[in-house]
Length: 415
Ligand code: HEM
Image (cartoon, rainbow, N blue to C red; front, side, top):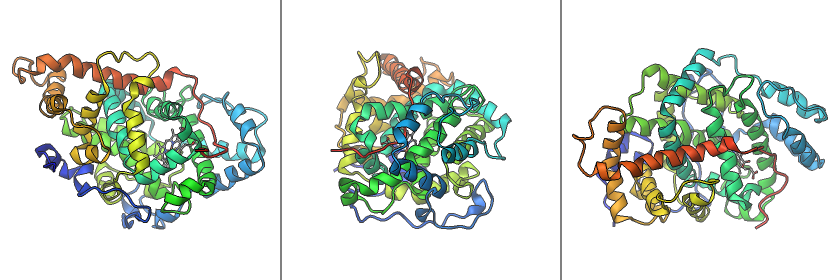
């Protein structure tokens, strides 16, 4: 039996601490009650409707109709040419879709250009750590979110995981670019297309016999599900950076949160569910993310595919960073319980290396500790850690290298 490590116990204040005894998720497992108050949201108030029963009605009705009238292949073809936030929508789009997209591409009234600019500075300064945490905290955690793992596995994209991972990485890449939400950036386009893709999934997945057999909800991707996945991204990333003692000025931390609040809005999440501060985000995550983390057969397979990253990074320099090293990194970031549930093998050398040397490595990199004063073994492994930072950055950056277009699905995964 595994004894929880001191680090895991220390994480009790964060997202993962409340995971408790992780089990394999059963189809009947319900989402936890939603009692989080809209007073803590960016809207400051709201109807307080339980988001487990709220989806994205306008987008959902529209995309269902596009799918049913056979318009999706043509729409996807046209939308491939729509890549920049400030670009006019392509001509030839169905009128109802065009009208919706014109509205959906508007930033919320509360978007703060000053904060978005500060977020750019933060992303530039901390890009390397963000790559590691998006990839190995958020990415691997997503395989432990049962509803997401099942939806990903049985939807169209599940048939080609490499393609899916690069498409998803595009959002992580776009939000970190210097012009993310500017007219010549791509984040708004990525969000609007993702919103449409999610609406497609809501229409299609309930028709999948495979998904229906294991699902615990009639329609996937509710607003509550969206927030769960959202927390696996910025909330989890920030919790890790704080744990590693990466110095982050308060205004940059707030700005990073703001860029993700805007992202949530652009993905169709209602303002009354979007937390207005890190405290609110942490408390919401504790309620909705922590209790649901569990392994599923689908998630275990997805985690294994993710660890085989060597095959998904075009031309990635993976001579030294092997699957066992990435497995140990995942164990370090997400803890023993999650790693064991995902059937990630123990690696006697590398597990210990991450446990004892990663935090000193960050301190040395940040100039907060001299290499001479760091544990002696760090000198031996510094290169590997540096290589990992670069690899993870490359993974996120690969989302920017390819002509990726997020598309509305018109079918489920046939397998
Ligand atoms: C598609 C991001 C929430 C299930 C995508 C894509 C992105 C994305 C960028 C496009 C990539 C692609 O087409 O493969 C996000 C973000 C979320 C979120 C940032 C929350 C903040 C969720 C949730 C679920 C989900 C909660 C399910 C429970 C899916 C599925 C697709 C998809 C199944 C693929 C559609 C296909 O098969 O083509 N998401 N997602 N997503 N998302 Fe999400």
